[in-house]
Length: 516
Image (cartoon, rainbow, N blue to C red; front, side, top):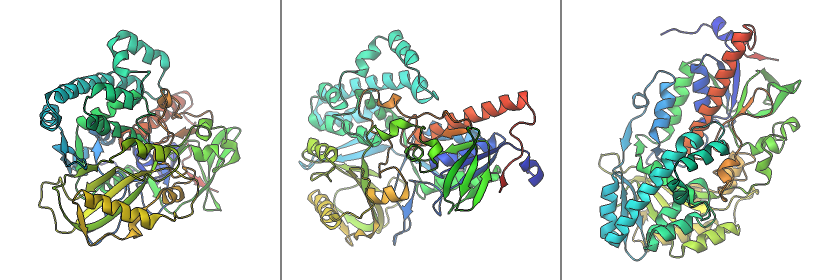
C-alpha cells in the first residue's frame, strides 16, 4: 500500500469537516480517498453523532439508529475507498422486517419477500387486504424507481426534471396522489384501518405526522422492502469502521474539539477557530451538522444568510429513547417490534400541540434478536416513543409518569421486563437539544409536512465559496442512508471543483492544513 509521507500530505488540498456523525464520517472518507488532506472536528468524545450507545450490564446498547437500509448507499461509500462494506462490519439480513402488535391481540409481520408479506396480510385481514397490499407495493415501487435518481441521487433536485418525469409516465401522477396526505392515500388504499396505521408510521421515520405529510412518503416502504440489515455488535461498529478507514486514508480525527467560528476572508471561507484559541486554515469546509446552527449565527454572524428557511419551517418531531438491559417474557419478539396506539390520531394531535402523547405507539428494538444465535437471558432493548422537539434544555418534570406509562403499556401487551429498567438511561428531546446545538432537539431537521417539503431543504452548495453542507438536515433528508447520500453530493462537488481548479492553476488550493 502506498503510504503518504508528511511532506506529501502537506501538498494535498486541505479540507475541514465539522461534525463526526454519519455524514461527516462519510464526507471525510470520500475526500481523503479522493486525494484531499482532511481534518474532521467533533465536539463530543466519540464519533457517530446520533449513532450512539449507552452502557448496560449486557454491554453497550444502541440509543439511536438500529438497522441499515438501502445498503447500496453504504456499499458505494466503502467502494470509493477501494473497500467492501462486508469486510469491515458483519451484516445479517432480516427475513422479518418488523413485527406489529395491536391491543386486540392481532399481530402482523412484514417480510423481506413481498409475497410472504401478502400471504401474512391475507391471514391477518383477508384476501382483499392482501391484494390491496400488492397494489400498494407496485405503486410505491413505481414512485421509488421514478424519483430515486432525479430526487435522492441528485445533488440539487430540479422541478422541471421532476415534472418531466411525471409527464413521461402519466400514471405516476396518480401514484403520487399530490393532493392527498399520506393518511388520506392510505385510507383510500387499504380497507383495513390497521394497515393504514401501519404504513402511516413511515411518516415518523422522517419526523412527521401521516395526516400532514405528503402521500409520496409512502415510497419509504420500498427502502425497507429492499432489505433490512442488522450489524453484529451494534450500529456503532459502522461508525468505528468508517473512522478507521478514513484515518487509514490519511484523515485526521479530532474529538473533544469545539468549533467557535468559521472564518472568512474576502467572502470565502479561510478556516475555523476552535477551543477558544486555535485557528485552523482551510479553503474548503464541510459543515455536517444541522444547518440551522449556521443560520442562527452559532458559528459566526457572517453565516446567518445560509439556509434561512431553517428559521421559519417548523422542526421535525423528536423522541424519548430508553436503552437498557433486561430479561423479557411474553410474546415472541423480532428485532423490530411496534406496539400500536389505540387512538392513532390522538398521538399526532398531541405532538402537534407540543405535548407528550397520552396514547403513544411504542417502537421496541430487541437488539440481540435477528442475529441467528440463541437469545441471551439478559437482552439489550431500545424503546422509542415520539415526542415534540423543544428549545428548552430544562429536564422534563413528567419523566417518572411517562416511564411508568410506557412500562404499563408494554405490560398491557403481556411484555414484562425484569429487572424493571430505571430512568437513568432515558434520552429526551432536551438531551438531544444539548448534544446537537440549534436543533431544538429535533431528530430529523425540518418538518416533512407539506407537498414541497422535500424541495425546501438546504443543499450541499452554499453561496459562500468553500462552504458546503452535509447531514440529515440537508438534502436528501434524514436517516442514515439519506445523510450518507448528502455526503456524497458534497464530496463529489468538492472533488470536481478541486480538480477543475488544479487543472487551471496547479498552485491553487495547495498548502495543506496550518495552525495560527
